Length: 157
Image 1 (cartoon, helix red, strand yellow):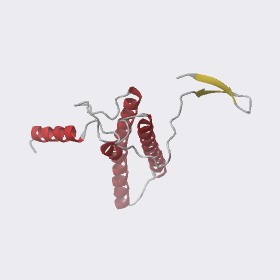
Image 2 (cartoon, rainbow, N blue to C red; image 1 turned 30 degrees about the horizontal axis):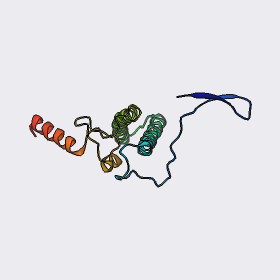
Image 3 (spheres, rainbow, N blue to C red; image 1 turned 45 degrees about the vertical axis):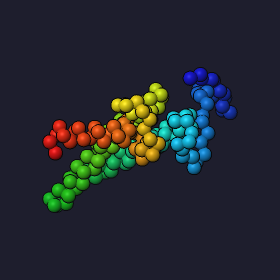
């Protein structure tokens, strides 16, 4: 990605990427009648994933601040037990979100690598409807269903 030195009004030098940004109107939604995973679709999903990741990271930051604020000694044993239960639930939720952030990062790498939107099992396109609902999806709906049926059989459920 080419980088140019740009002098801002204060006289400071700033490096800026010269990568062309794809213009997307606020109401843009990927459509089946356009080429699959074209620039606009990739940018749409990149933004969707990045916004989702930022929301999760903000929530995590708020949780850490909240846990630090609530790290006080509660004299009543019932209140203390309730607070510990709430804290444990919050930490489990944040752990799930940490794993979700890793999946979002993986999806962003697939966008950069040109693999995003294609099933990792069949190589076929994942439907835009599925990606819209679950932008971290790595398998088509059919491949995911087969995978879940095999898992269920192997687990003995």
